[in-house]
Image (cartoon, rainbow, N blue to C red; front, side, top):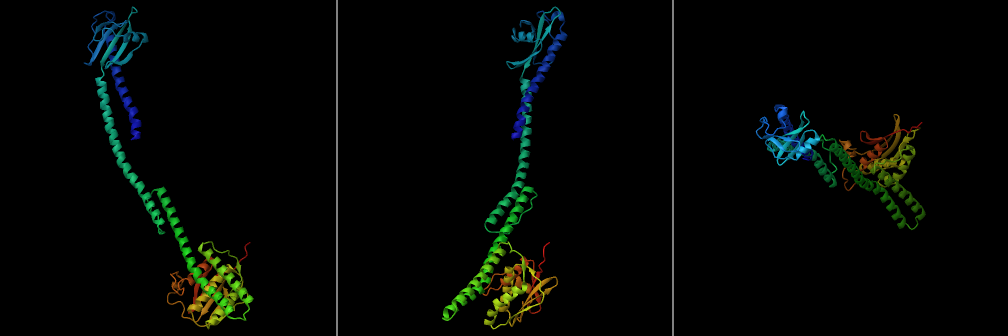
Length: 416
């Protein structure tokens, strides 16, 4: 609409000027025809016979240089004649509803006469209004087409952004399954992809935070129980060495702190600082931690180490958590003696945790799928162990028939 106004306004004014100019040019032609048709010696005489105009609404008149009519149809005295004489050229004007053209002419004797050609401006106005009406109809048609096309295009443009609004509101309500919709509009598709990535990251972050609660509960249950039992036994035994009990409690608290730190790193997806780890030392320490617990359960825990074991590329904290999960799983859900062994495995290293239980059933992989934990904690431990192992660049697999779980870790290599 604004474009039509900006274009139509000047164009309408130009049309009016065009028709007026055409009328003036026609009248100037009529005046020139008078000068050609009337003999030179008759131009300055009163009552000179003028030719009939071609248009019925045109009036022709002859004036002297003082503005007095000599012949023809027109006002007896016309002050504009003197101006035309002074200009020495055709004078065009609109006056009293008429278009008037005054053409001066110098006779051979030096006297000047002026031919006046005039017609009503009704034809000019009529043609101007008719053209304006046609322009208005055309503008209305253009505006209608633009409205239809613009409405459809606006709807097509608004739809993907309305979908984005709905997706953002759904994300605000906690639905992290938001997925971008391809609309063909580059800006909307880019915003949808960004929103989808945000939803995915928020969902993963929330899932890790939820997993941390379950993992922390699972991993801290046994150390807290041991710490509590140690303190209670010291309080119940008057002859107990309380200093030694406090030192043991501090050691166990350090272990709890390390557990929480490792689990927080996994939950935040930051990972622990991977370095070099002596598997023989780590596994011996795990055997010492679990020996007493295994004995209290009437089970035997043994550690087997191959000779010339290289260092592994992993962190001590993550490895400690993985071994604790596997040994705890063997003691909780297995049977018979538990063997904790470290061996060479190709270019890497392997830790086998074996017990005499029935194993993981016909679908071992199900045991590694995180589930809602029941009262005994089932559904968390092995999933956590696999996550920690993979975060260290290793793998946790079912090592063979029966109940054998194997941790595969890469050997440490010095960087050049």
